[in-house]
Each structure stands twice: as C-alpha cells, then as structure tokens.
Amino acid sequence: MRDGAPVLIDWERSGLARPELDLAALLGSIVALVLQKASTSTGDASEVRGAIETALKASRSMLAAALNGYLAAGGARPDPWLLGGNVGNLLVCRAYTTSVVDPHDRTLALLLDVGVGLIEHPMRWRALCPSGGEVYVHSN
Image (cartoon, rainbow, N blue to C red; front, side, top):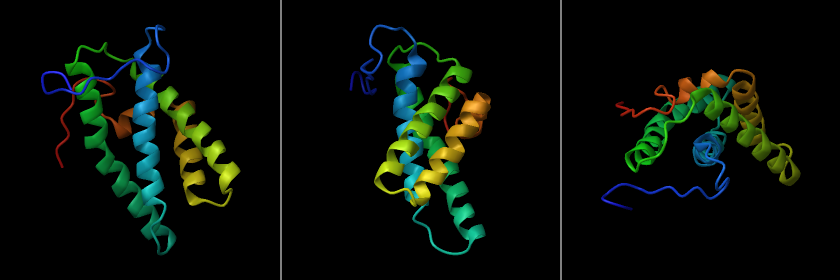
C-alpha cells in the first residue's frame, strides 16, 4: 500500500513494459478463482449456469478494484484487446494445468470455455470488465 492504494509490482514480465502481461496474471487469477467457486454449484444445468453468470457479474467489482488500484498508483493504461487475450491465455493454461490434476473437474471446462472465448474474441474482456482497463467503479 502506498498512500492508501495497492501497489502492483511488475514481477512476471519485469522490464517488458507491457502492463497487460502482468495485469492478465492478476485479473486472470481473479476470474479463475470466481469460476472455480461457481463450479461447485449443484443443481440442474440452468441453475449451475445461473450461478456461474452471477459469480462472473459479481467479479466485476473485484476486477475494477484491481484495475483502479493499478491506475491510481501510476500504472499505464492497458490495451483492452491485449489484456483480454492475455487473460484468455492464462485461463487456458490454468485449465490445462488443472487437467493434469483432475481432468473431470467442472472448473476445467469453465476455464477453457472462458479462456478460449477471450483468445478468439479479446474484446469480450469488456463483458467482465466494462472499462477494459480504464478507471471504473462498479456498482451493483
């Protein structure tokens, strides 16, 4: 924390000057955890899908807080196209890693579905984070 704002350190791709790479690691981890939690829902397919959609909508405030903190601390504005694609890559990599542990995990299917969707259509990132990387305050 610095002056009441979280400070994010360029740890993953230090020196490459592409904020989307590091932000994707952070934001993708948030999305992955939300999907993992939502994947434990029980019920019929429509109830499970509803729980997943609700969880993803709820994640917007977490994603906005992370981006707002990054920007408030002086971070460069990320390119939403690069950010969405990199979040997709992280989710797909996490899904493949998860498949080694438990290939029948519902989380795997969710990570692959969302990850591939973001790789193919990076601007879908705005569905999760409407600001795309600009300062955004989410209200429920």
